[in-house]
Length: 292
Ligand code: RIB
Image (cartoon, rainbow, N blue to C red; front, side, top):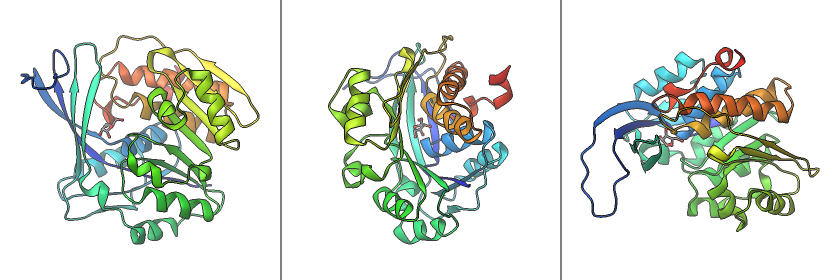
């Protein structure tokens, strides 16, 4: 079974600020750093660092070479990541004194994914393989349809939540990773267990992992199984990519045959390590750090 992550690659421009800028406010930053990021790339790196064999498909511009290098360094197969003339996607990220962030995305090359490119990538995958998707590339609806009809297991992290998701057939998704905001946007419910109930009734065959930041995470299974995992407490430096780390580690644990309960515990530890470090992709730990 092969794992394909078809997703974004971003250059993250991270500004350290006292507080997140208010509307109309001009704010001086304490400094700026540039990190590799993008929900897609972060999740591929997390999968690879957690020991999974993963292929990353996506598009970058001419100035995005460091993103390919970061993926390769982590052990990600980048044969389906191509360079085009459109600028690389980027994110402008404010990180405040508490490590909380605010992110503005510029899609760039990520939004140049075409049906033709998706077809060429998917030709390399078979029934029983697994595809992981987020909502930072174009043609998401097409990729979900095509992967599902090819018998590929579809895992979706519908983030960021926006109108592009309306065109996606969520009934074709086998596993969801959502935070409480995405959970609310998909179900209209705010309470974690009610969100899981709503998922169970809307998508009865799907598994759902609901992450709640400092309040832990829930797993909801298709047969009504519920598992809660507390958050691992650490000093927060930068929360960027915590969810991506969680996603990559949970999936990698699942691929190793680890139970969903243990997978939640491992993913929670990995996310805690990520929030204790700066940046997106560079903050993701390797498997041995978590096992120790
Ligand atoms: O999930 C964190 C990521 O969101 C950042 O790396 C940024 O690029 C945005 O995609």
